[in-house]
Image (cartoon, rainbow, N blue to C red; front, side, top):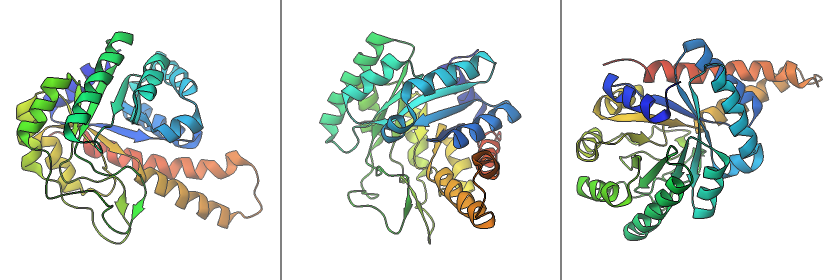
Length: 286
């Protein structure tokens, strides 16, 4: 079985991207895994700090390891981790990758804390990948009415800042702000990605680039971003939205049904549809 870094490097060569999908319920997990099995494509499963607390980090690690023992190319990422204690907990639990998110900090403080996170993780297990985030894009995976406070789409990280950050911290992956935001707009389109910025940062840093806030991004922007150097794309809000909408519809259709497996089967299928559509798009070669 290939490691996550091998999978990402292969994606770079093919000019495709790996899908990263967050989950917090067994129904969502089952849907994502079903797509990986059906398409035989690598997928990264993500757990935010809140999702880890709800689902159980160690339980998720054991589930993913069991699935991988069956030959499924599935990996587990500790998504947006905001302190070193959370980084340590995730590394000791045995995840495949960890995001230390210091994007809300000052540039220098982000660099300092990310460097500490890298050392902490590599001392525990050098095979765990550590990702840094540069440029604040928000924190919540939800449907938006407006661009959240403190997100500045006019002053994004420069190429020089990105290269210096990578060189100084030693991160394995970088998630730069390139016009993306967490969440998706309910009544408007998300801001367009800055494709030239992606291309120039990729040329400078040479490590896998990650796109957060994928929900709401146009297919055109996805394909251009992948061609320009994005290797991993995060989708969360889209999954949460379809999960809730599907659940509401099935409860309305069958108001007296109380068997969870009868209700959730429809929800799983609807989440599968979203995940499969994204994986197929991300897997298209240029």
